[in-house]
Image (cartoon, rainbow, N blue to C red; front, top):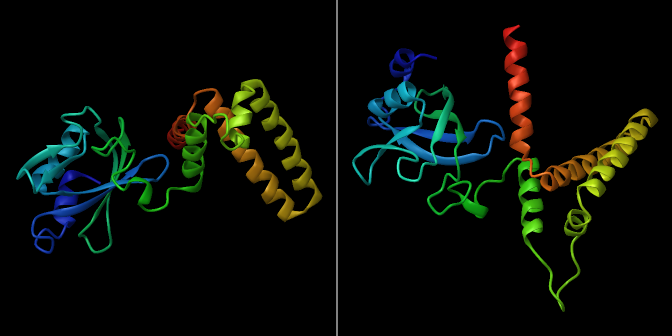
Length: 213
C-alpha cells in the first residue's frame, strides 16, 4: 500500500487527524504498544522506515527510539475495515517500553503468543538460581544446568516420540508429544543463546525468497 493510497483511505476527519496505530512484532505477533499518527507522522514513517508518532504530550512528531536507540523498524502497514485504525508490523531494536519491558503492556498485558510466552518463562527460569533451604530447581533449570548436549539429546528423544505417535494414529498422543518437542526445542535454543525470533526470521527469509521465485 503506498503513502498516497493510505492518506486517501484513512478517514482523518473521523479520527480528528490522529489515527490509532497498533504496533505488533512482525515475527511473533506480540502486541508491543499503541500510538497515534497524524498525516506527517505517517509520511515520515513510510519515508524513513522508522515508526514515528505524533506525541500528544510533547505536541510534536516523535520517532520511537530517538533517545534510546530502540527504534521500531517498519515492516508493513495495514488499514482496518473502518479506515480509522492502523496495524503496524515492526522489528523492534530493543525493548519497546521506556521501562525496559519488551512491550508497553508489561506482564499484565494481553496474552503473548503461546510459544513467545513459553520462551519468556524458560528465560526467567534460566535467570533464577535456587539457594540452600529454597525449593528444588525446576525441570527447566535442571535441564539447562546439564548443558546443551543433554538439551539436544532430549530434542532427539522427543522427535522420535512424535514420529511414533504420528504413525500410531493416536492424535491425543501426537499433540502431547509435539508439545514436549516444542518445549525441549525452546530450552535447547536458550542453551545455545538463540531466540525464537532468530528462527522465525529464517522462516520469514525463506518465505520471501520462495515468493519471489
